[in-house]
Length: 455
Ligand SMILES: *Cc1c(COP(=O)(O)O)cnc(C)c1O
Image 1: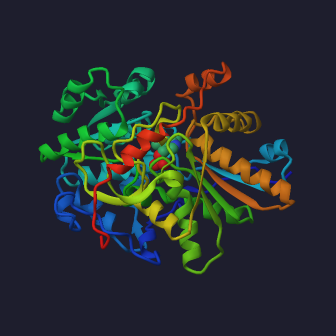
Image 2: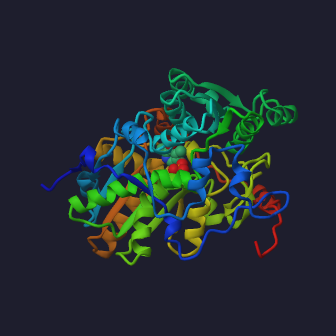
Image 3: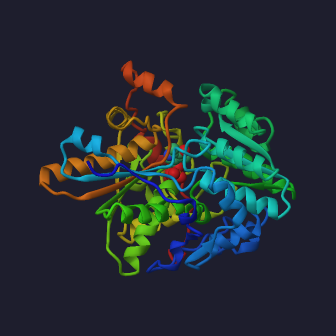
């Protein structure tokens, strides 16, 4: 029997993150000021982020050193293991070799601490006292609460109302780390009060929670905002996933023909994929790169590549991305981390350049794949991660049909221990595949801000 686990020594943990902006064949379209429609500069972002993170956002240097205090915290769970899924391969009867990188070993149970820790570090170093943020399913709020506590920062989390009500354990974890957690829309912000006045029982959305967190951060000099996905620096912090995976694939004497990840805002996908894309852009072996998204919130496969706001209250700058429209409310489904109207500008740009493929699956298809995976490999994936599992299984079944022994690598971005209600519903046959409302999508897309072509 060949090897199952590929483990790196602490001393082999990468010393720098990889910045794909250094290798892009065509630069990213500029970020625009929503009023003037002119490109914004670093100073425009200063009310929200510390300068170190802003400089990472716009940097075109290939490698950015990971500060030692961040590496010290990373070592609590990194390097993360890479597994060969022998038993899944057997269950599928595929000639393909399937590998997965497991990010569920972090204290929060997902990849998100990879960026929460450096974000808290750079904010604390800049003298910031308090961070505001939003959380949908709760993974990001948990991760920032953990990281903020380590670096002595107060953390205020706006949790989307439905998730606040449905996932009391997530909130309990955030409070254990010392954070304050409020349901969004809330009465603590002007925007929240406006939304509640229109609809007192509003279930909330990520776009609304972002508006609330941004509003508070913009008001106080000692308070900044932290985002768990989408932004360039966030995606860059996640590249430690792919950089470690490259070393581990070499240990396994293999190289992926296909790399698969799930996409909400794009960060864990970028984390595993960008180092491989960069390798190919610099003339190395090329892997197919597949993004898997939910059919109920299909920004990459059904959205428009256009300038849009990152939030519902229109307080953020405009970025060019695949978007379903900032007013689009996706139907309820059990992968809260994937319910966002937009996609990371870097992931969108690479999709337009033809470096990335995208597919969408329903939650029923993804839970079926996740249960098959759990029974073969033992780990119960997060509902978001089930999308990556489904994508990898589809590739393995294609290899079986075509009689090809390809190598598949996917990112198992988190475990599902806080999501067992969703699994219970799946087993009870109560998980419905909600389609989004085509009319609402058309309306949300018709409301995109108009930006002249040249931009
Ligand atoms: C937040 C989250 C996601 C979605 O965010 P990305 O930025 O697309 O990675 C996916 N999986 C898990 C486990 C998450 O916590």
